[in-house]
Length: 395
Ligand code: GAF
Image (cartoon, rainbow, N blue to C red):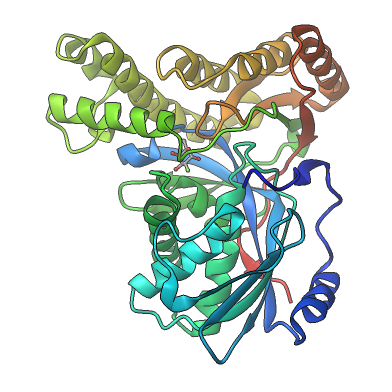
């Protein structure tokens, strides 16, 4: 998706009526409907999903929207309101891994994955609009995929449950896009709810909505987009996943989910030094997710700051997926008054989050912008997010 401008600096997404009008202007007929799906912030639980562990993401108030029309033939025509690709035309029969470029990999990957499930996906016309920042670790790609699968599930009458849609979008990411990701991001986008985080057990896909509201606690959640672009189809994500699989194999467990904090001393004698640190991150991170859920229930968001900090330290030192910009964003936010901060998402760039007293928001923002300028880094984009609804039809 690197050819498109960053929607973080672009205007808010077009109202549904404008998107429908643009669709009609471009394709010469009205769309069958408009669907939207949010990006996500992961509050805590990083690189635990593909280890069958626990995650606690939430859907954010930034969405991808698709206007979709059904054709009577197999032609597929795709256009986005940003980027410079123009209308991309293909056919349902020619979809195969490696056949798509840029943002079109996401809708076409979903169509391919549905066809792999025997679902008769017709030709379509699709217009995409999004205000989820690209490459910022907020899962702009899954927002597109989840909007598309929600639309196609309805338009084809496939009747897929959320769990099936999660697995279909994972297959699209893994096998069509080529990113060996887990199930967290699409679960948040499809199953999120306003005012809640999604506590997901990635072994059985059991999801529990956990109340998570900043305003009553006098807090805001800042996202600091470092503008360091990353891609999970690059090698870093895959190599971390491979280290986890190696760790589980040597320790004789199905997945690292089955290793407890109390097992780590013994594990250190069985694993090489680097693999041990990768394992220690996952095992302690699972424990931090469980502690976070408990604290949110007992004492609310003001009580979880130390767990966010510990999560960041673990990703920086043990999993080694942070970068100088993310570390600076986290350290500066903390020093300026945030009660907890961590990088969020797969790492190697993207965004940090800072849980901040509302009264300190401007101080934290100013401090981070100043620190980035002094370090010679690109100016970050800083904005607040709140837990929002999951994917739905909006028109
Ligand atoms: C990316 C992946 F898509 C998720 O599945 C998850 O592994 C995350 O990185 C790391 O927690 O967002």
